[in-house]
Image 1 (spheres, helix red, strand yellow):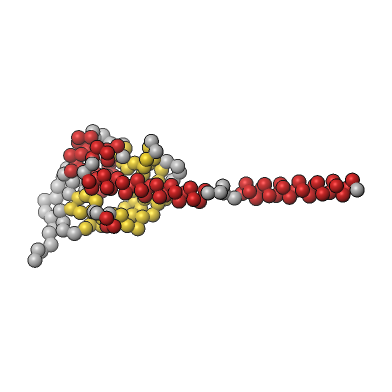
Image 2 (cartoon, helix red, strand yellow):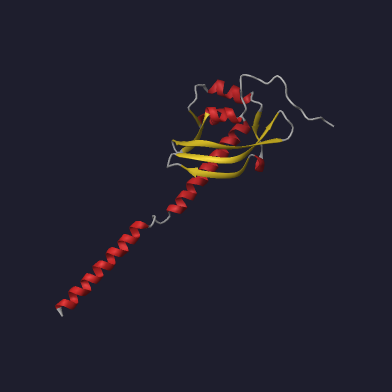
Length: 164
């Protein structure tokens, strides 16, 4: 009788250890949902960056940038005089793919639409690094100026399609 109770106790212990080992191997409940939520947060914050830029709200946009030498006035002047700005609505951001590189770093690869000096919408496919600072995703000033096609050197000639 004593052997039987010891055997039952041993079986219960072994089964609880195997269940605990299986639970340790599985990701925590909601981890996949948390990752998807983080990706949506990156996408939402980047869209907000594009919207701030398009609307000319450079002071708020300046708070969403990092790593630049320019002050607010210089930054706003450069973006205001840049040859292109984000397109509206569905054209501004397409085919977005987000790659999280940790809790505070991500890369967004997307097809971005821009309005500019050339009639119509220009599209660029680019990978953009983003960092999370103070609870929001930010972009570097140099990346933003690159997207704006800002350069101190202006091209001498531009191709303009024949207007009918």
